[in-house]
Length: 84
Length: 328
Image (tube, rainbow over all chains, first blue to last red; front, side):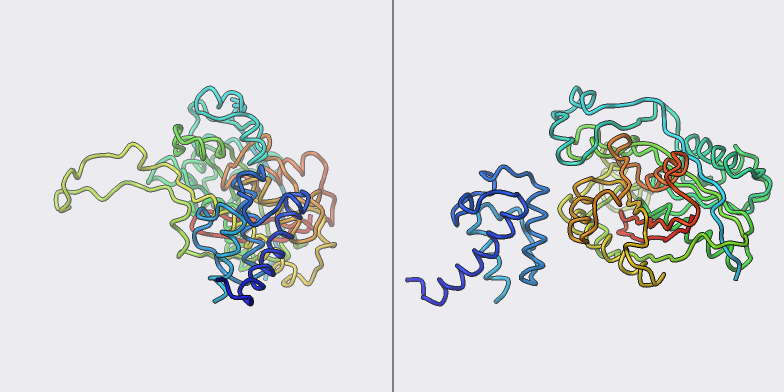
């Protein structure tokens, strides 16, 4: 069972990351779900660099191995681990 | 302290135009792939001219534009990562070619920041009275250090040269300079020289040569991140030194690496992209030459009016970075 406060934390991070992705790629919010793969969002590696830079700045963390980030959920987990 | 004036500029690009379509015949790539990721459409590639040949033509072009004689020049500083030889320096070869017999000549190794560093060095020499007329050059034949089998890098780099003449004068063109280096991140953008090989080296196969030894290797993600952050930092520092606002700057001439880097930087700075001068669509990334070529192109196109403030900013291997605010 995922604890309730963890679920809330995940949701808060997800919403912030979703906002970054939506603004950067200029797509609809509905297109970005937790399980969405970055490949499905029709972006190239440079878009991913830019989204990662924005995420790093927003959460004041450093993502060392961005190539491991395949889905939005991966990004959320990276941020959670980075903050801790 | 003497005042430093920029009295002329010059450039030279090899004649051979290589389009993205041409490259698609050599490596697995496409015009769409290259354009969308870099903004580059075509580049110039040497058909045999070496760095000193390109540098000499750019230098003569700048000398003509400055209305000086080669004998007037007392300093030549040339930025390159692709010198003709370990020795003599490319600056000395240029000296011979143009007949600048009164000059002290040396190369500097600052990769894509080479022209910016050269301008800073010449500025200090002139300010202190050590030099009166300085020729600064950024010149590269990157095509000789590109791995032509690596589709991620061979589409980016190209050949070219740019130059400028600086002189002790009554007006000051150089109103702020800023630079720095981050050697700890040097492994993200490299081009090896020769391995150590002598009779006392303990490793086996000491004379084996890796054919990709002296080719450019780049960690695109790290360089992208570095570039965006360092351009913003350099611009902010320069504005602070000069006590200016971004609105006071007519054009920003960034090192021409990748239009996506420039787009993202402009967005983060909240500055319209039109403030950034871009010609990488025609010339690709010419490393130390890029800012010099851009400055010459803008000057000859009549884009720069007397009194205009222009901000030059470079970044690259080393890692190195720096910038200058010029009053035209």
